[in-house]
Length: 279
Image (cartoon, rainbow, N blue to C red):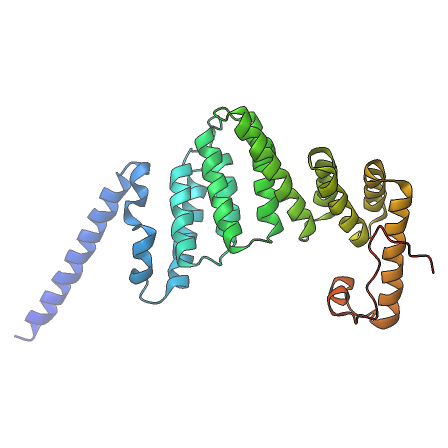
């Protein structure tokens, strides 16, 4: 009689293995567009995580990377968008899926880029910026998408192209102002001075000139700002920067200048670029 439970257990294990094998075989026969039928809609994933939202987000994220790797060159933008939606619904403060999803949704396939693909990538980047409004990588990626990809993609009216290009310039300007590398800042200076209003361009170039340390970058900024204002205005900005640098070196040279600018005592404000700073 004692052997009966053991035999039942063996039979149960064997049956489970057989069912699992058949399920895997049937799933492998599914067309790729049904791959995500096993992934519930985002609104159901939260309760299904049983409180382990980030752990489940990690599992879905790994699956997304594997899926995209196995499908290199395929046009799976819709599925990529669903994966990103699932991961970011569970962990909205996970930045990498937004960056990955935006570029993979539009450039991961082989067919000609169309408006649906651009709009899909745009939506992913905008969702990311809703969580990380100062992320220079997302800002620059969306800015380039709107500034250049839209203009070369069919399906947009001339009014839409102009409006999105202007928005893209602003995103690139914000990327430059939020820590993008020097090449992006140089590009932003050129782009803003060409497309923005004079007041916006002057404001942006002035702020960049005050902060810039690389001499080649500073030379470019001086030239572009001088074309919009005057050599004297540029010289005044340089003097403002020099005065701040001297104050920083005397008071707290161990602090990054950006930090010191925030916490510095206020014996008197530094002059604005248009004021006379002659002692």
